[in-house]
Every structure is written in C-alpha cells, then in structure tokens.
Length: 335
Image 1 (cartoon, rainbow, N blue to C red):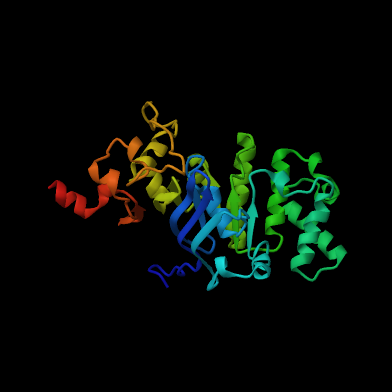
Image 2: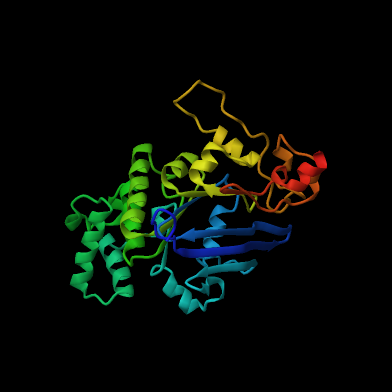
C-alpha cells in the first residue's frame, strides 16, 4: 500500500533499450535508438514528437509488426514476465488482439470493405472466446453501443463505407476492446477527424481506461490531445526519448529544450497574449543524425559537449531528461 492507502500501481509493460535500425544502401537508418519506458495497468502514456521522431516505429516494434527483412530490432519488451521480442510467431499472434490491441491512424486499414462491421467484430470475438454465432452477434451489438454507435442493432449490418470517419474509428475501437486487452496502442487515432469528433474519441479512450482498467499508449503529434488524455508523456526526438514524466509536470515545466519548444508552440486563451515559440530548422534525416545530442543543431542552449557526447536520461524530480544541461558534471565544469 502506498501512503494514503492507495494500491500500488501494477507494472504492465517494460521497454528497455529498444532499438530499430534499418540497413539501406545509404547507410543505417536509426529509426528508434535506445528507447526505454514503463507502463502501469490502467495508465495512459502519451508519446509525442514531430513526424519522423520514431513514435510509430516504436509501437510497431512492441507489437512485432515490422516485416522489413532489413530491420534490426534489439532490446527487451517485457509483458507478463515474457520478452515479446523473443516469442514464437504463434505465441505473439495470441498476444495481439487478446492481450494487446492496436488502433491505427486510418480506420480502413483495420476494416475490410466487403465485410459488414458486425461480421468483423464477431469474427474477432469467436477467435478469442468460445461463443456461438448468435452470442457473438449479441456481444458485437453491445460493443458498438459502448463505443457510441447509434442504433447498433441496425448499424451492425452496415459496411465500413456507410460510416463517417469518426464512426469508423469507433468501430475500430470496438474491435480493439472486444477481447478485453490489458493494453491498447493507439497510433494517431484522432488525426483525420474534425475537432468535435476528436474530443469524443479522446473522451472514449479515457473512459475505457477508467471503466476497464485498460492501459493505453497514445501516439500523437498533438500536445493538446496529450494534455487532455494522458497520465504520463514521453517526448521523442530522432528516435530517442528526450524527456518523460507526469503530463502535468512536462506540460507546465518542460526541461528539455525541445520539449520547451513544443509546449511554447501551444496556443492559449488564458493570460497575456504572447508570441508562439518556433523551433528553428528541421529534424535531421535518420540516416544522418548528428553526433552528440541529435537536437544540438536546433538548440538555443548548445555548448561543446552537446556536439560530441550523446546525453543519457537524467532523473530530475519526477521527470527524466536526456540533456547535458541537467548533468552535475556539466555544472561543475562551468563553475
């Protein structure tokens, strides 16, 4: 028991030193380079960063969905005491959908156009549970109702193209939760939706975590979505985690210069009007990441050590930040 009588959080997933490199004719592409994080049951972890920062590749590696024969994947992904990267293909198929589910950015990648949505959900239900066809259909109707599909007993026989984008995303969420997974990985689930529908999907994801105890890994480039949804946030840059910590702390007091730039670019309706922060330059090509800190060409606080030595995560209060500015050795040298 933690102080105050609260139950200690149960660790669900541990990712340790995960790397995904691709061998190409132009050299090695370091899409993910030494990523480590932990996730507790019922927790929402937001993963944010610019396009090309390694967010989606990290999640695809966790799910063992990278098929490229030139991919070199190293590290550990521990779930229920097993390293998912070492499971046989058959054992990993049982994990996918049953214990860990994924929601993709485009719902149509998960929905077969020639199948009615009820048939798709019933097929997944019968693959993971011993249900008759009628029982699976009844459960599919319940799931469609749970994710907010109106008149589910009628819409169950509709085809994916007969739903709007937001409704298709709800169907995909119903598919993801039908086997009651412990973890849902959501890859940009609100990107293609308008603002009002985004808010509905965010509320739905939060409710799933609250009602089912489902942990969520939410991949996005939208800090507003992260601030509204997540318990913790990891800020990624050039295949690495630049900063990770409780969402309130990272949003209100970012430590890494890149995280500060991201937070400073969020418009606000409170307080005095201020000019939004602009991060100069662009993210480096993953095949030509600069030595030292990958952010050093764009950083306003860069100094010599940043150009030669790669920073490792340093604990700073509730946050961990990969930046030499917070290293005691740097401060001693400056003194």
